Image (cartoon, rainbow, N blue to C red; front, side, top):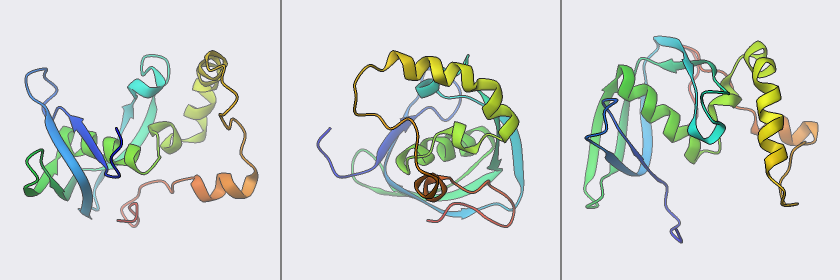
Length: 148
């Protein structure tokens, strides 16, 4: 969109009646308690490519709303999970990157099919080991959360 800013829009209550606009977010605190649930993503056609993802039960956030006002919120449960998922996108992380190996293997056929649909020659399908290691997010745990 021509802006050097991070933003996303999400629905905090799993309904079509409300959207929250989040600009330049940070997650300032993660709960030590985590929940592992199946998670998919529209970027990966979630019906065909979902897996188990560990997320903090609650988070504390700071961001600007669509009016530029600073917002601080503590999110929990579904809303915290959705916020973390969308925040990952801003960091270049897909939920697939957080899947355990067995879930990655289970969806690999679908990932290969999606890659086959992309016919431009500017994509990187295979990374060298050093680049892949740098890009791989650590799994979430009570002892580690993504850097702020």
